[in-house]
Image (cartoon, rainbow, N blue to C red):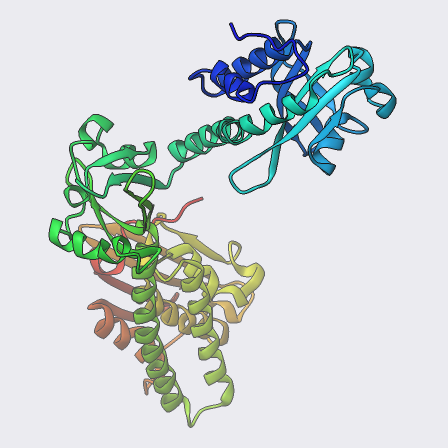
Amino acid sequence: MLERSGSSVVPDDLPGRILLGAGGAVGEGFFVEAAKALAEVFGVRWVLFGHYALTGEKSANTIAFWDRRLAENNRFPLRHSIWEHLLETGDCIFADRLRTSFPKDSAIGQMGAEGCVGRQIRGTDGAVIGFATVLDDKPIAEPEAIERALALLGPRAGAELERLIERPLMERLGRIIEESLSEAYVFSADTFRFEIVNRGARENLGYTMEELVRMSPWDIKPDHTEESLSALVAPLLAGEDEAIRFESRHRRKDGTCYDVAVRLQYFAQPDHVFFASINDITQRREAERRERVLMGEVNHRSKNMLALVQAIAQQTANGPPGAFQERLAALAANQDVLVRNSWRCVPVASLVRSQLGFLGPLIDTRVELAGPAVALTSRAAQVLGMALHELATNAIKYGALSGEAGRVRIAWEIGEGLFRFAWRETGGPKVREPRAQGFGSVLMLDQPRYALAAEARWRFEPEGLAYDLAAAANVLLDTDGAERG
């Protein structure tokens, strides 16, 4: 036990004896031992060490509270208190008449304190982070000695309090990093062995922490060697760069790889380690690949579209403007269906309805659709769509739909490796094969043969036009694009 000072002449070594009384304790233990030593040496009732809470309802919160013995920590309102005065004006001595000086301080009033010596506790950046206060229920007999003792304790108290304040923040940050979906790695700058790897990385790689501590970055980076990685981090070790960014691949335990974006930093103090924050960019790379493919497809399809428009224009140049406009409208309808289906596939029923949309209420009344839920490739949809438009236009002008009683049945099926499409008109006026074949025959007969290797033919039967198209199913159909709903 420390010797109590009973003289008004304070020995010069007394502050050092108090610091010695705190012993080798750390953290909260340091403040408890320091509070006990101060109380015993100076014969005071209360010693309070604590920190300020300056968000929300501002308060002074104790981390060591001595009241003749170690007491439960407390929280005091900051407003109008001795601790607010200490925070705002600096170190203070009120040897007596403390309650008179702070009449609105409810804590002081309840305690019945008469004297106080207080000192700010500052962090390494000089900011006030806490307080040390020595109080008694009688006037303070040796305020200058207490002030010297608190001044001697100040640097150590600041370091310990800063660690106590940071500890829950660091623990919280550690939990956040551990649970993050982004990958985080800490590895030695001497051995390059992994020291910390968060759960997101462990689960993505398929390795346990016990396995990873025996590994180095080049063990999971197939595109790098020890030499290439050493050269990569050299600017960090030399202090030339604060961080470096690069993209590479990681190899999982099962041998599969994924693309990553890396941000690497070097921390010389205190641990001499590298920290890597890593994002899995597999989806981004796939999106970039799809974008490149899409741009290529757009370029290819634009050229095809311009060629088709040019052919339509040449074939209808001597005809009425309406024919050209109608065919362009049919082409536009095809494009709408293709775009809605991301240029991948078009359900047959959707294609038929889009091309026959101008028939309105006739669809499902005088125009019957029948066939399984299958989807065409974009190329097949474009060719069949133009043929459908020609068939529907001729039916309205000359065929089954030109009168009140005619009907059209549109059917498709798959069998024996073939996709078969049939258009049947009944109940309309008698039809005959035209003496001269125009561009309509090109769209209905020639284009399917050349573009799809299809067999396409028409027959002008007594009951009406019959049109058939048949081609290899694996050429026309998108096997993953079956119509839904």
